Image: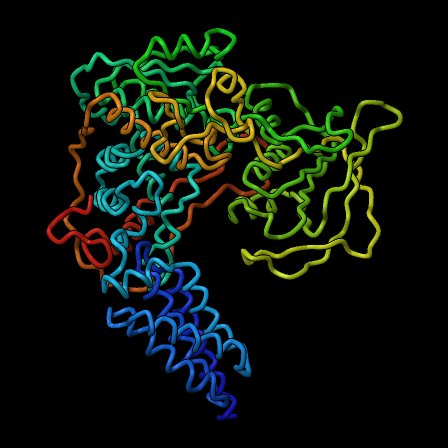
Length: 612
């Protein structure tokens, strides 16, 4: 019994070690030298070796020495060649996966980062742009000062926290509710327990102070320059915000009745109440000289040439609001609709009672989850989501779980074959045909592949088929005006958001990258605004009078993460009311106190500065 207890204790200790190992791996900071990261992974593989075969026992030790020699700047091209030959030998002759995988890891690094090896050998240092940064700030596409506003929330200075967010992102309220929070992915708090709930703290701030109540930064003196913004979504309004604060006159052209783009017409009310979105938009329109023309479609109400000739610069923030349809028979039957179109029709107030109807959704992204949960609220009898493989479930895990709680049925390993027309009511969908799949080898990106199972296809009856297979932008008018496009679906623009070979015309967001997130669109609008300002001959800075409080040492006591709670599924699925509950004062204090203040300490720190 003592031996068994001892083994149990050993297993528990090993579980804790493995947990800390995985935590450290997930917390590697952005900007870290790739060779250092590969070296640390390689070193852990060495510690797993049983030592029975020579390639693994002795070869890994020698390969680690050679790699370390290169990292510290003492290696030569001969050292690199020797390392390559050593790892190739280990990968081909080691008796088990420990040696093979470790050696392949280093060979992969040579293929992926040849410039890093060259720099360490020739310059004895990392490449110039490899600098460790504050992870949450770096991974936020808009580069919001996350540690700064968390520290302000900790001190109860909510209005200043919102102002600091708006220094980079004029949609603090919308992002507090719908952002996918990539800033949490590399949070260094994972080394201790779990990532800071950054979105939750942002929501706590906007729950306590409305964006309308927070003063708008003082704008620069008028420049007399005019900039047109086509599209009143997150990218267009972000560009308008910064350009207006810089002193330029901005005119926004929006096709819909109201501003907001997909934030208004693509995200359901239960996730983003539109009165909350309006708080952000109202604040943006206070930024400076911004004129808005809604219900105005380019090519119908005004030509692009008129816009271009009447302004010093133009920004195209069109979004991707047209839902894709599959190139198959019967895709245009009544009852078949792209997910983006379905959500826009519901948001526009179209009567769509699904009571007693069976709804099928193809696709597993966030838009598909929004469509599924919306169908539940429209009283559908049953809602089924089908995907080919688990990797296709790209929606946030929290969205998938919420959909399951609300009664949505999920099934993977089913490929979509064709749509069946109702023989009694011609022109309407009656069923979909699905082919069972089996999993296959991983592809070059590490994703599971599938192939047809020996099982026969089967028929699944449905009254409404929603296609969650992506969206595209309406760029036909701009293509006709001579702007370069990609596959007639995207505007061809570079990293500065300048449309290629078209001086004075800029573009960003979903119409350049394809369907993405709100925060990526906001980041594109910000980048475009600063580059438009440079194009117009200026180098403006947008004022922000808020600075982050001084940091205090964190005791690093392991603490549970405070999550945003939601209403009971039986309550929330019966209406479109906002589902998230406010974080309590005690939760916000404790959660904000977990921040390690990486802007002062550790990677990316600025000694004596605020890290802003």
